[in-house]
Structures are given as C-alpha cells and as structure tokens.
Length: 258
Image (cartoon, rainbow, N blue to C red; front, side, top):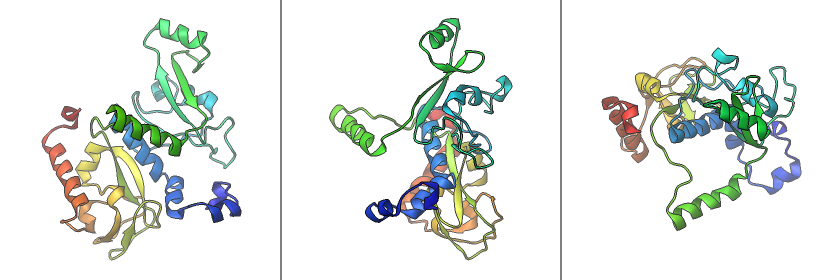
C-alpha cells in the first residue's frame, strides 16, 4: 500500500503512519466523508450514485466539473466531486492536483465571465465556469487557525447547515453473517457518499459506526449495509445520537433544517 504514496522506509520508520487510515484514502472512504462534510456545510447536493473520481488535471477542472448537460461529467450543478490523479489505465494525470484543493464556480452573467477572462482564471470552453485552486493544503497547520478562530473570535471556519449527505458502509467483498465489521480502511467495508434521504430510506449504517458490529445477514460485494443487517449496542451514546438524528429527519424534511 505504501508504494501508492511514495513514502520511503526512513519516513515510515520515523513517522506515525496508520495503515488503516491511509487505506481509507485509497478506497474512497476519506473522500466520501470529506465531501459529505462539504455538502452539509455548504448546502450542496451529493451525487446520487456516489463519487465518480474522474481523472482530471487542474487545467481541465472547469471543463470536467460542470453538468453533463453542458459537456461536463457532473449530474447537476451545486454538487461535490473528487478528481483522480491517475488515468483509468494507471498513467499519471497531467497537471494533477493530488495535494491540492479546488472549487469550480459559475458566472451568473456576462460581467463575471469578463472578469474570469481579465483576471486569468482557468475557464471551460464557454467561459462560464472557472476554477480556483491551491496545489496544497496544510492540514496540520491550518487546524490550529480553525481552533484559534473558534476560541478567540467565536467564529467557526465551517459548520453543518443541513443533513444533505451521508456516507454509508458498503461491502468490499461478499460478507457472511457472523463476521465483524472493521470500519474505515479495513477489510470489510468502505464508505459510499449518497443523499441522506436515500440513506434514510434503506436505514443505511454510517461508515463511522461500522466497526465492531457483527453481521446478522450475508452481504454481497458493493451492497449497502443497513442497521437491520447488524447487531449493535443500543445503549451506545454514538448510536443513540445517530438514531435520534435519523428519527428527526424522518419526521421533518431535511430542507427545513437548513
């Protein structure tokens, strides 16, 4: 697994490298969780059938990450997606954004389109969609700024506005009743991003709680796991809070919580 990251033996020996955590990056779980947080914090819609991870370099972001109806690869506007730094045949993507972050924005009118052009933003062929990006994000350093902002200024750098997206445990392989789920980055399940209403409809088991629970039913590869498929401790505080949230959103449409 470490070959995917290019870490040396010296780095692995000197650092705190959790293989299960790093594996959750590779199987798509970490991306799904991050995009769920973005969707819920920015009131965006998650894709209906999970992240697509289209191969895309920074120069192609506004061309690829726009609605399919306008020549892109997204199901709709106002959604989230993660791009891959590898082509489908394994070749590195030209101008990949492996370490970076980005946002694709749409011009509401001609004036904004003119500004995109005048200020040198990378746009799609129509000039209506533009990308802003950084080639890096310094997670450990930026976390301190967020904490200071909350504690000193009383301002969050991000907060949940609604429950638009959920990440549901999905089987990595055919699973048998009696097996124990081992959570993010493990051998049994990965996390799939989906609309919260779809998760509610199937009583989806959130990936964050999918460890230590024993399966009651056989699960096929890529099948979504539900609460009905597992034995779980009903007295667990995390379970109680999650089930209360589900009950609340069943009674009242999620949009009304925005």
